[in-house]
Image (cartoon, rainbow over all chains, first blue to last red):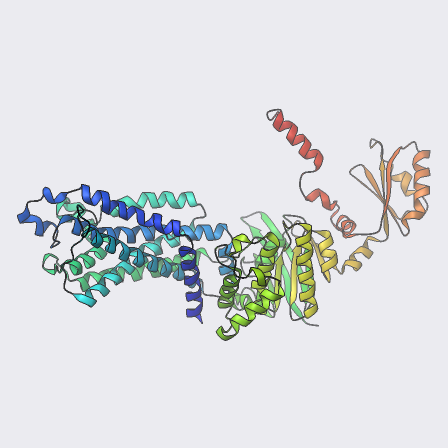
Length: 274
Length: 334
């Protein structure tokens, strides 16, 4: 019975999402312009000697290929950061009351929103992959060249990594949505968090160029862990990484479970009768 | 007849000092429409929230359909339908999708959902709008959808918190008709809060008058009116600088006099019979009269009787207050 309620609420979230196409397009515009402008303009490849390119890009054939997989991590992060805004609107428009008055476990109110966030994130991530690959076929543009050979297993690991990164950040920010009633406070926190998390990850730049202290942080950043799984599989570059994709995925999965479970407890606490 | 709601000493204190509901006890009988009548801020919604498990009582206890609200809140939620003051339907979903979602959340068997949803859409006359998104619905249609959603699992008790708040008179009448028809069909008990006197009078089998968190009186509308003790003759003098209570109390047939806001309320078994005497007594005492009116007891009078204040005073600033406010605003806040 619980599964049905979970699916019904997840479906509701997704219906609301697909019925706001402007929101979908604008969410994709950011990574699109990063790929079209930032990725094309920042020709890091010319600054790195060809002999060192493999070591710097960790086996990716060129900087754009390296960077565009990072952009998939970027869209996962952003999908997660904004996943909690709906909670604040649901409270403001009264729809959350319907859920809290229903005889359902409070955790379902939380996990259904995380699962809708994950589905949105995985769809966005796949679209960003597709745009980056398509760029390779447009004259004058750098594009993503896949050199990996891990096939279906590799693709599955990539999808799970996408799901984990989105679930982890969605859970934190959905719980925040339950804790705060002000949309202004919510977005202030999103703005505070997004760039530090992005810049302390390996999404945009190779961590070999980072100072030692930042390198340590970047290694444990969940965005980096997800991007590592995706890059190793996309470029077949296991030789450049200390851990295999499955090992990175294991760490990421464990972190995700801890965060989702912890945030479910926080949400339950925030919904307790006062 | 058994009780579907039983509340004993229910109290809610917010913070350390704001007592929203103060030692409230009542019983709602099976199948009846029980109304909580009171002005804004009287404690009506707080009581609903405690009975529907959204708020924890500070003290006291309550059972709904025989289930303790504190011990088994999820079981209580399974047995009740709640219509909140604000709309809880999802604007981006259609009417039918909203009802299907409610059916899933309340555990209506999958095989029965489509039929039950259609039945409710027909009952609440929303069939033609079922495939439209709720954002296109009028206020009255939204309230009907809320009622449909709350009935989807055939609850034992239906809580309606100010179900007609903000609706135009036609939509209000429509909602009242729906409640009457549900009452007639049987199967549910109703706990209704309202600050509309006429609504409480026409819809409720029994009414509790609540003011400042306390129940002042409970009874059927006619029992409460009887307690007022006859007709009320309201005498408004042209000047209010002298207390003429004794003058009016001496009029034959007058059972009691109360002076409120520059007018006198004279109680009498037959109001018309004391009017000539009251007018003569006033003129003899040199008191000019602006108006004299006779009223049969209404809930308005009942509220005044049990709370000591006219009901309208609680509705918001009076016309004079507004005039003063507007004047201050125009004068730059002086």
